Length: 316
Image 1 (cartoon, helix red, strand yellow):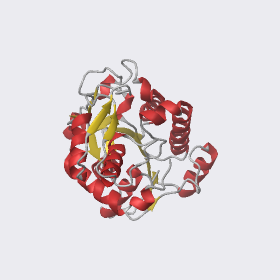
Image 2 (image 1 turned 120 degrees about the vertical axis):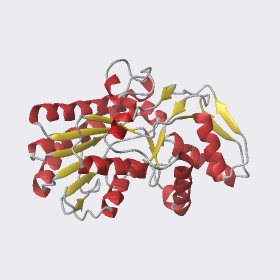
Image 3 (image 1 turned 120 degrees about the horizontal axis):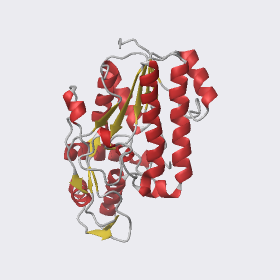
Image 4 (image 1 turned 30 degrees about the vertical axis):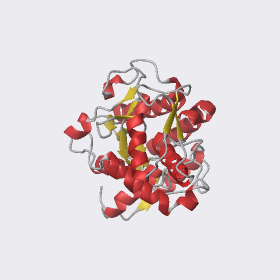
């Protein structure tokens, strides 16, 4: 990629897309293209195809998706399955028809089976059943991975899929109804601290283990994939380290300075017992993470405090 190459970032206003935009800007890329939801409906295949054929980007980074935690996936299964397939199908098919050689598809570690051996290797894809609490999103993302693989095999184009672990950071979704575990916890502890250090009730037992990656590190992985031709179709992106949800809660509580108790609602679902990524393939080709969890939480909380008025207005 030349620094003047036109690169389209789908979902450039989201947490991941905006991090990729910042990372590319810092590296000197000057021809970045983005469109808001009002400007371009990514679910509309004709709109997307016309846009791509007019703009003619040299590369596409697909960071657009409908995302959410266990509650959102459970309440809106149709939207999580259909809308994500519509978005990615429009972009991938449009890229192929427009002759675009480079496509980076972003997914999630939830594509792997619920009880797959740990750590999760890329070859475990489609070897067993999925976690029921997020299977709708997972199935959509799996189809995206396989479509990119099919194009890679059939048309020899550089279409690659990166599967990040749980991401967090600047511009995250902090809405308690639809957010993921880390930003939801951060907001809960912040509000409890401001409410005379009231107790914080969290879902599940606290025993499941999760891996987290600061979103700016994810953006660096995308830049690496953009600047290099990766030899395989699918790569895990993460830290290769995990902690219990209880340890995560205690870390966030300490960063925020909350003095109340943590109460666990064991009647609520835990989700997958453990989700740790095997990130050796990315490491072997020259990329690894740099931001440790506590440092990333501190950066995220500082951003949260600076933007709190706008955050409270966000409803996904």
